[in-house]
Length: 121
Image (cartoon, rainbow, N blue to C red; front, side, top):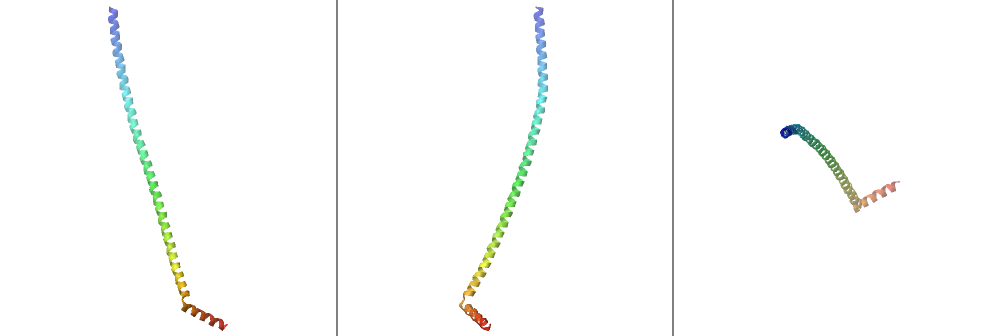
């Protein structure tokens, strides 16, 4: 019977010892888990900041590209407007000269001048 009591006492002591070791492991693991969770949160914040900066850089690059394209388009529009303006000017001058040289009075006058000059020589 003493052996049974001693065995039960040893079992109780062993169970308490195991329980204490489990509590110690839980406490140390809890601290380790909290440490890992905090590091994980820090890593997540760092990644968010990194992606935010990358997104801002991409947005600036995009805005710059749009600005360049807008400037190119404006320059092309100005160039074409100048071309059309020149075409209109030269077209009007050409039409004016055609009209001037097609008038019968001018033709007669030019013919007369040419004859006079030709006859002088």
